[in-house]
Image (cartoon, rainbow, N blue to C red):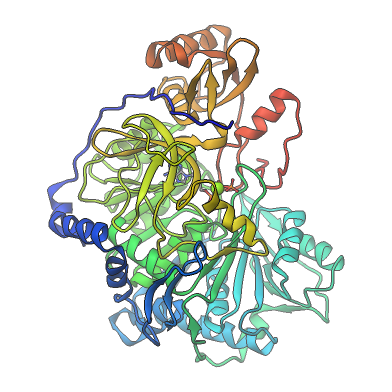
Length: 636
Ligand code: ATP
Ligand code: MG
């Protein structure tokens, strides 16, 4: 599609929710401060980000906040020296945070481990020493093929501490995906576990690793964490147990002095729209971006118990499970297992048991839990919650309202945060003091200059959809695409002077942004361009529907027609009448352009391993074409 044109606006969601006065009064940033922050950021964004950087500790200050002489390869905080681990751990040891809980971890069988900042600091130091003893040096890539364990966080921080670049590969990926990423990253060292618990079963990891490592000789060190207690083969020249290598290490270690733009990690995107790319993030800019956004968006306090349900293997896990909460000196919660194990109340059980105060999750999780109704949440005391969050996909207003009312008692604002692996940090999101519109990601944060434009870069009128672009660099932005600078440049070349995010959005008369879906999934029905999000939200608003995906299929007369795939709520039977009713419902809600050619019921929708609907797979199935890379497909 050359001409994106303007997208039709279908959904008119007009519910508005106000934050409670108590929350506004106690917020880290009150409305006056926010107004002046917006002013400063608009007038002098670099001064704004410099202020954010001054909240952290640096070994050497920057000469310049931003060097754009080699744009689009922007360098933040040039010639500054720092290490994110100094800020996330070392500095807390000298403050009252020392004996505060850094991590609450719960295993799927119900076993729990808690580490204070001091304990985490010592564990990281030991692992840092052990990695050095194994010959890992600054700049080496270390691949972590790890389930969500305390050792996963320890290993990430230990790598960063010694200046090694970690590269997490989600433990649910097959050996093939691991192999590709090991090769692309050029890693010598791999850290893994014997296995882990998922959905009541032990999932072995090490055998898949053995198979992969036999076929190559680049990786000559494999560290194994004992989690599941299953028997594994240990290759004598290559494999070592984590517990053995850390046992005699000193609990003190030097934190490597890094240049601000030295790489901290590389991480592959979810692969929702195509082949995953290895996104590179740095120590300096990234730490400023995530620290600032956690503080402002989630109003983080040291007393919070912050539960971001993402796996550490995704960007959300990197930024908001591991690094940002530790930078803030708060307590982060990590859960090993499946949200429905042993039954659909596990998340409410964990929330009540540990007194979670902020819960940050995905639309997919919310829709899944919603499918089980209100009985489970009502059986638990959820009053410790004070704020909620969503990320990863557009959230349907129905799911938003359910989350807000049933889980948040109508008192906890929902932060619908838009961002990407590439952006590193939250970019567009409400803040606790603002008005909330269910289904809208609200406005760009101060310092983020986002716009909605057509293919030529010209702004589209209010309430018309177009491409979401970012017009100025931001500190958490990726530094490169690993081994592929052309792929990096491509993000900036589609529209001169802009970073093109690949999503479509519209802006309403209040300046609120509404995400409409992926640019390459826009459906073009007789000249009307429709994003997938609003069509799907209208379907989810029907009482029978749990989840929906809409795709465009070629049509001789209309160019394309929309086809819906629908999963039903518990207890609802599929029937031809229901399919007909859903089509009628769509016409009634959205008008004739939203006519569905057909509705197909499914038990589940295909999703990525990070829980996003894989529309391109439905489309390939429908058209009988090749689906492309499907290594990210979650097989439940
Ligand atoms: P790939 O880039 O490999 O196709 P991906 O885009 O799913 O995969 P991520 O970086 O994990 O990889 O996800 C970022 C994308 O998720 C965004 O570009 C957007 O499409 C979607 N997204 C994230 N948060 C939101 C949100 N709050 N509302 C709507 N969409 C969101
Ligand atoms: Mg993407």
